[in-house]
Length: 191
Image 1: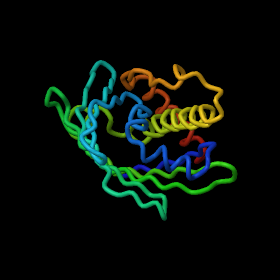
Image 2: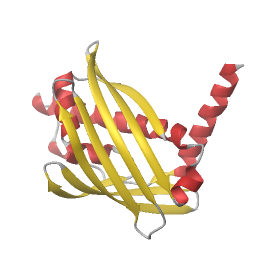
Image 3: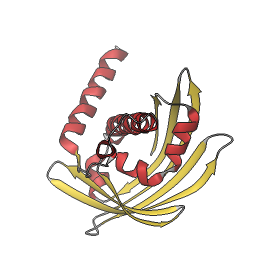
Image 4: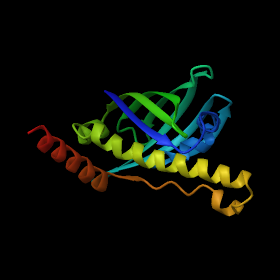
């Protein structure tokens, strides 16, 4: 399944690029994700908690930075996750591209996602809409990280404010309802 999302952040392309390359800072911005190990400069291990109604899944994920092209400000990450209790797998290739947009930076994300097991069964039909909700949360976290970095450079933020928050599982009910509402609104716009 291919997913495309875009958002803007209030920072220069250079500042956004530096953050995008800092995977240990970016992983906690993904809802439900927690960095568990830094293997080397281009490989990490993470845990992703997902709740789909009554089912809770934990994916143990290997993340790799396959490409980073500063000239085009493009980063390609691959992630392979296996559900901790053997109930499925997830694979994703995520390509992020940055470009200047007014006084900020536009981030375009193209994801090629493959799911198997309960996540695929329960997520069928809603994955694209849910991904929009997740990208919105991800964008908010990146904005917050960039604003904290800018404020720290100016010496106006206490270090405690920059500490990462513990990962909460991605709640399927609220995201599912938001995704369903987005589908209903699109249906009525077509008429």
